[in-house]
Amino acid sequence: MGSAVRNILCVCGPQGSGNHLWSKIFSSHKDVCGWEQLTKKYWVGHAKEPFHETWLEPKLLYDRPFKDENYFTNTSVPFGGHVYGDKMIPKIKEFIETLKDLGFNVQVGVTSRDKNILKLQQERRWKEETTPEFLDLIDQIENPIFLNYESLLLYREKYVKSLNINIPIDYNSISKNIQVDQNQKYICNFKPSPLRKR
View 1: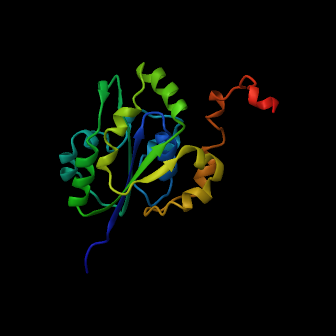
View 2: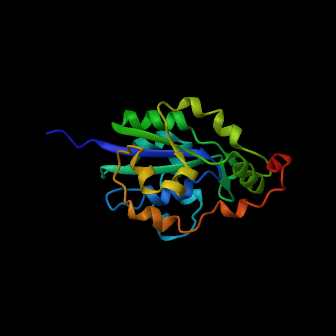
């Protein structure tokens, strides 16, 4: 009898596009080996993500023991901080190809969010817009599953069920993790337009 197929969902996207929220959701099921520490805290830096070193050096995956059937991992592009210093760009294509070489059934989710919110987030974090750095890499991803932040907030479980993710998902974790709409802080009243008089 052959060994069970191992599934992994790899999520990546521009910094500020909801990587941490999606990570909480996809790591919550008891049968998924994911970012468990993040399910217990509001925020944890990417240096604590269980696969973070292998996003930068995918060959390290060959030395990693894989005992579970379902895995989840996440990175943003770029990521960094005091642990890494300057912005770090993960080796997405090599990472995915190495997992496939190890026999994984790989799905890749790509996070998205309103581009104006992304710009504000990135300028706060990096002092410049960094979405183009991810867009330079997106062609390396075959058949991505687009994970839209706004659709998640609006449709919740219905939206996630439509994505056909291979790893188990704890759907109760969705509403639990989006009790506060983080987009509200970016929304303000606009000045009336001449068109409104028509």
